[in-house]
Amino acid sequence: MSDNIWGYQPAANYTAGTDLIGYKVEATDGSIGKVDKHSDEVNSSYLVVDTGLWIFGKHVLLPAGTVLSVDPDEQRIFVDLTKDQIKHSPEFDKDKHVGDAGYHEQVGNYYGGHRRT
Image (cartoon, rainbow, N blue to C red; front, side):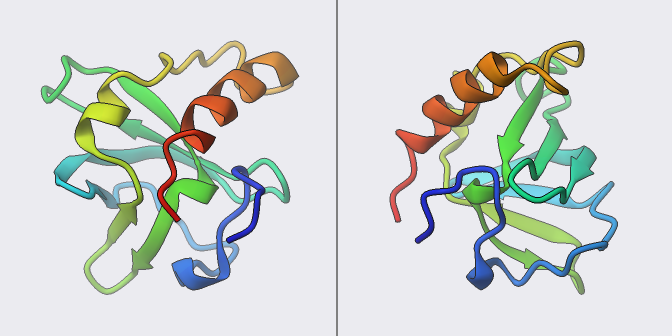
């Protein structure tokens, strides 16, 4: 596996330019919400997931490196994280996530420490 937490892994079956908004996101132990926003910029790819009522409407920023696979037919994204890991992740900050290297480092370090593969 690549060490780049902000890049899609080749095995994820993601094609650059695919619109993932509205795709359901599945943790290793169940559904966590839907994609609200995403980016496939090189070294800065991510998903913003609306967790809905599951954790009271929290939005989370998931680096693309946490994506195990994308199923375009079922419009589902499978991530290498548990619901609990996502629940305790750093809060998504819409004002910091673009252009704030410190915020990206914080989020990347959190998720990088939780990847199993």
